[in-house]
Length: 162
Image (cartoon, rainbow, N blue to C red):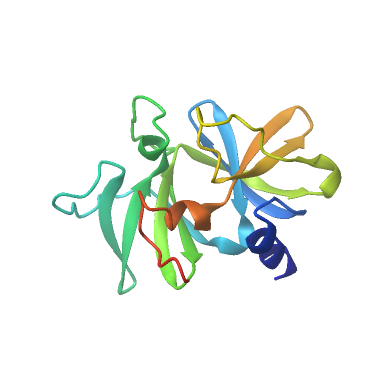
């Protein structure tokens, strides 16, 4: 719990465990404490007039879960669904949300010595949702503040107060 509190207060990645996943050629990480489960990508029920990145909803054991394709949300080019495409079911705030990713890599432990702050790009690139960069061996992992992303004005999937 200390890990989550420090992220929420500072907006900067802290040491802890992260689930890593791929989107295109890049590797991303999210706080493992926000992950409920990982599932294969199944058909979703489409919602009329939803933004392109909201693929629809699924019924997960009686809970209606919105499914967001992060590849579309991050403008990562052509999206294809194959046997490696997975949905990470997240518990954030008081909501359950699913995010579609190319594949899940592993769970990694990042210490403060392997974390760097997010680079500053000025107004040309929105880095509000990037907590920082983690390095493991030769791998660079972009750490995403998934709660901040899901509660952003564009996504509006979580209450701001949650």
